[in-house]
Length: 231
Ligand code: ADP
Image 1 (cartoon, protein in one colour):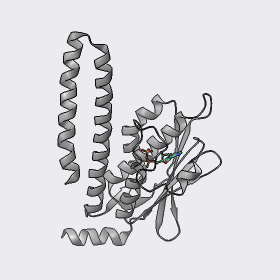
Image 2 (cartoon, helix red, strand yellow; image 1 turned 135 degrees about the vertical axis):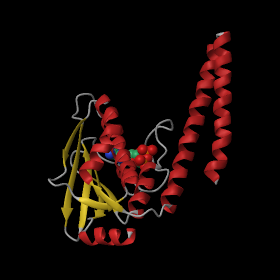
Image 3 (tube, protein in one colour; image 1 turned 90 degrees about the vertical axis):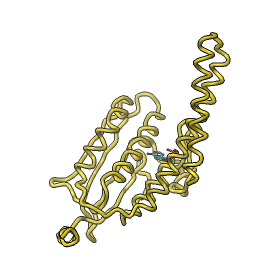
């Protein structure tokens, strides 16, 4: 409800700014245009926070049934969305997803959201590195003991700042500038992983950050239960 109430005035602000921009262009008032751009950027940022809030609330409410998700398909689909941004930043992506890749109990769209977020965070860390430093992301899928599978995303971005590591999944924790970061991404991803019965953890290795998503493996019993429910 809150997200909805905030969205409308924000859209009105954005539209009003757009109209003023058109008018100032006609009169050639560059100073006014510069200020309008700042208003537009702030309205956009507020809009992003509202959108995050909306997804956050929806993620918690969403009781959609879990389905089998192949981790290779998940990675492939997500790279279709995020791959362009990574290539543009000069990042190489290596994958090792197993043959056959694990199949987990989850939901494709929230999982794509989590993976996209992890990849774009890695991109941000990598583009902050000095020129010439290696820019690599590695995505690895594996089956572990206890009927779980893991998907890890590691990068060569130098790692998570110690002060952030302790509060990584708390909302509004960010080291990015106000225009870029909201500090909501990882808290939402954490919530989505939990809603699917899984976990999300973050740590550092010698090159950079490592995020590990753990989910239950989709079993024959799951498939039978699904079929019984459908009948
Ligand atoms: P945002 O991206 O808006 O800052 P997130 O919740 O996604 O919000 O991330 C919170 C913070 O965690 C980031 O600002 C950054 O400091 C840190 N972080 C996340 N991913 C990485 C990474 N791959 N490498 C280094 N730091 C990271």
